[in-house]
Amino acid sequence: MRAKLGAGIVVGFAALALAAPAASLDGTDVVLTRFLPPGAVDDAGVLHLLGTDRLGRDVLSRLLHGARVSLAVALLATVVSLAMGVVVGTSAAILGPRVRAALLGITDFALALPRVVLLLLLAALWQPSAGLVIATLGLTGWMPLARLVYAESAAQLGRPYVGAAQALGGGRRHTVVRHILPNIGTTVLAAAALGVGQAITLEAGLSFLGLGVQPPTPSWGALIASGRETIVNAPWVGLAPGIALVILVLACSMIADGLGQGNDLDRHQLSRLRSEAH
Amino acid sequence: MASSFGFGILRAPLVVLGVVTLTFLLLHAAPGDPIALMLGPAATTTDREIAARALGLDQPLAEQYLRWLARAIRGDFGRSIATGRPVASMLWQAWPATAILVGASIALSYAVGVLLAAFQSASRHRWVDRIVSAVTVVLAAIPGYWLAFLLIMVFGYALRWFPAFGAAGIDAEFLTPAGRLADRLAHLALPLATLTLIGIGTVARYARGSLLAAASEPYLLVARAKGLRPARVMLRHHLRNGLVPIVALLGLSLPALFSGAVFVEGVFAWPGVGQVLIQGVQSRDYPVVMAATTLSALLVVVGSVVAEVFLHRVDPRTRPS
Image 1: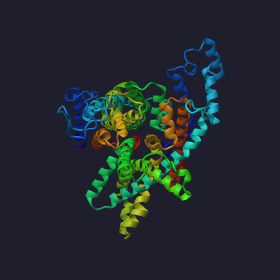
Image 2: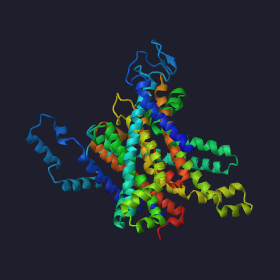
Image 3: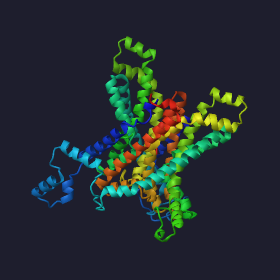
Image 4: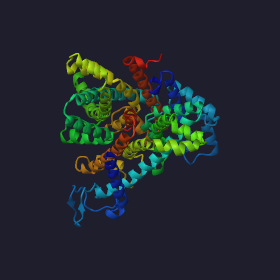
């Protein structure tokens, strides 16, 4: 139920984001009336549901166009970290003890670094762009997933069905892909949903600092940052994207909680993953 | 159990070494030629060779790495490109501000978070649990920089209770010692509230989970059957056992806490390591970024070791035999 509600919200946002070009003004369009409060109608008779910003751009349009960037970056980054997490986690589970020690050691090491510091380091060394943000979010987000996949796969390895698959001549890769992964899939997806929420927050954080996707492309973090400059006379500019962001992150954690309840996604693991979030 | 949490004291130097190595490798992998940047387009080939030799950039990579390592161990991170000051002294000035902010927010968020969770699990009304849970879930989902935005809007501009940025007022030099302290505390209020509110969300959720898990333990039944008052059962039996995982969370959540502090320091212009790092990144001041990265890893590692020692004290079962 929870998972469905959460998924519904995420899909709703995604649909709005996809429909943004058709449903709203171009996010960079300038209409001439600046600082219109939410719900105001400008001189041309156009309704601005969330008001306009200091350049007279419609906040709702920018929010929807920003959702395209924020959602796409977060989803792609999570795909990257999910792929890395699954490869590292399953490899650690099925390959020899030395490989396992090395992989888990690297994972623990990477987990011990403050993620934001790594992101800032990478953003300082390379030119900020959407591709860079996806890569860096992906490369700094796989560790909790790898640990989870490892723990879950190792637990599955002792189950009779794995022994049966191997006795029937199934190789390592076959066992992992056809037998272990389907059994741990839901748990891993729950963790990945949390990862999407974190990635959205972090992408917005980077954009907020001017190190993410570059303006005038709207992204939620950049919108919040621009709202900060007009905090006194137009607080709605920064409020709207922040509220949207919190709703989306909550939806992601609802998906994770909902999926985790059906399976036994350990509370400990959930909290551990969640503690990486900010 | 102990080995799955954080790292042992022995592993801490390894992590720091790893960070120093990683920053070195990333610096070399990154695009851009430092000599071209330094000398500009008018430089001749001879100029470049001289500069490369002076900086040691003509040496093999392994040699450069060893020099980098030797300098890092001595705490010599060179001079900031933007300010011309030695990086080590910039960070030496900055770290106490970060330590105060993060330390105070850990103490406060653990105290309030655990209290909330205890209140939740002790309350007989389901709606209390529901409401507190809803609040903590939302708190845990709010990004720090946006919560900061909200608090500045309400308490900085609308109510004018607290200053919105900086660590001291411009008149701080002229205040009495007591006045100066009050000024410092007023400046600490909003950044601390931001970090703490988010921390409360995480801690309370986690504490609720582990108190709930401990709620059906037989020793609680025994304590109640003995006729102990509910408050005593909660304090001496339930909390003491239920909170062991919370202590473990402390070590695990340090990297995340520090990450949060980076954003919060940036928003409030709090003069800590995070702000130095952000300014370094924005002005592409490599020596500053490298050093701040290393220092932040060091702070996190030291914090994790402290948390682990603390855990061993609280729960003898986790001590290495």
